[in-house]
Each structure stands twice: as structure tokens, then as C-alpha cells.
Length: 312
Image 1 (tube, rainbow, N blue to C red):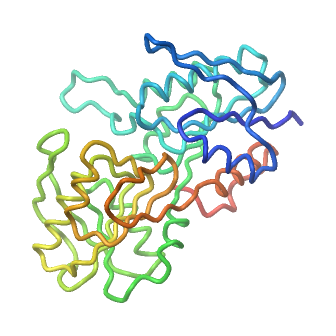
Image 2: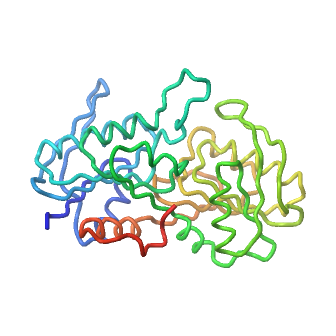
Image 3: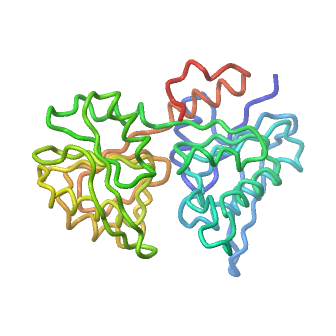
């Protein structure tokens, strides 16, 4: 059996270190350096010849830098003789560019997936892609994990008047999963995006009045979708004690200001990307490290993942 080697990119070194610790190893030594002109340079400081290499690198903000770093690390490992390369991307950037809307745009998700394969990665491990259909974008094997079980467990027993809310149609499947697991009803917010950071709510379907909403989604970026959903829920008569649960807490741009103005009692997210510490609301972080370590160990030993309750 080839040696298992884990390489940590700079996208989330604390998560990579926790995964390595759970596997009883340490990330391989490597250099990741930026030049004044913006170019990146990587260099492996350990041999990976014949090894089974797992590169832990979420392609979160700044997405272009994190993606390029992943590609360079993969190419370095391939040229250094690695036997097998797996890209472990807890968060996959460009996932929202999964189709053409007006006909003159690129399909960014497909292009990025192709680049990862071209760099030498024959397999990808991802968590809660924006759409399950994105698996078809990758040229190699995709292990699509879900954080729903971990997030649902972190909520404990949901209050009797709770309702799980999908803030848009894309989150309906996630809301259904939470609803089934915790035995509470669900509702759906129908929105229309009016700009890159602006949305308008058209209607809400499901029981809301007098209930405590738990908004669930795969990601929260600037907070615009959540803010629009919260305002609509409050107008519909919900209890002003709102919980937000997301797999990926990007929290970029004006997210701190937007969320700080809302009656959100708790934000629950994973550590797929580093979480900002300056948000004016309670944040509960659920680590993906045990799940990723378990999956990496099984893949290294060529064991089935079928028994894991962690698939989309």
C-alpha cells in the first residue's frame, strides 16, 4: 500500500492540521510563497514519489489565489511522482457558475473542475456542493459529502415551534433533510435575484406564523439572501428568534453589518473555510475534521464509504 501523505494549502491550515492529527500524521512540509507581482510559488520539501497524496485546500476567498495554489500543488506532486492525487475541497469555489443564464457566459464550475483534473487530481472530495449536478463537471471520481448530519446534531433537539426554512428554491433539498431528521415542518421562501447582492422575496410557502425559523442553506456569502428571508419571515409573523445554519460560512463583504442588524440568535456553520471572528452575533462552528479524516482513511485503504451517513 502506498504511503498516505497529506498536504495543507493555505486555504484553511487549521482544518488541515486537525485532519492530519485525526489521521495520526502531520501535513507534509512545503513552501507556499507569493511574489510581489501576484504570482504564487510552491515547492515540496518532502518526497511524495509513489505516495497516495491528499491536498486539503478549500477554494474560498480569495478564490483565484486558493484555486491557483491548489493547481500548483497538484502539479508539483504529479511531477514529483505521486501515485495518486486527491483534491480535498471542503468548499468548492465557482460552484454557483454551473450553467449559462443568458447564453454568453462561461460555465465556470465545469472549467474549474477540468483544471483540477488537468493538474493531476484523479479524485475530488467535496462537501455540500451548491448543486449535486456539479458532480458531472469533474472528469474524475467525486466523493460528495454532506455536513447535514453534523449540523443537525449540533442543533440538538429543536424547539417544538421550530420550522426549517429554505431561503430559496436551491435550498429546498437541504431543508427537507433537516426537517426529516429533526421532525419539524419546513417552509420555502421564493425569491428573485435583482442584482449581484440584492434579492426580492415574492412569497413564502409553509407554516411561519408563531414559529421560530431555522434558516438552512449550503452557504452564506454577503448575507443578502438570508437578510431578505428574515425580513419576509418577520413580516409573516414568525417568532423573532432566528437561527441560521449553513455548510459554508463565507461571510464576505458587508455580511457583518447585514447580519448584525437582524434578530439572529445563532449562526451555525462548519469550518470548511476560516470563519470571521468579527461578526456581531453568536457563532457555533462544527468541525469537518473527523468526517474528512474518516473519509481520507477509507479512501486510502480502498474501503467503501457506503456506511457513512454523510452523502448528498
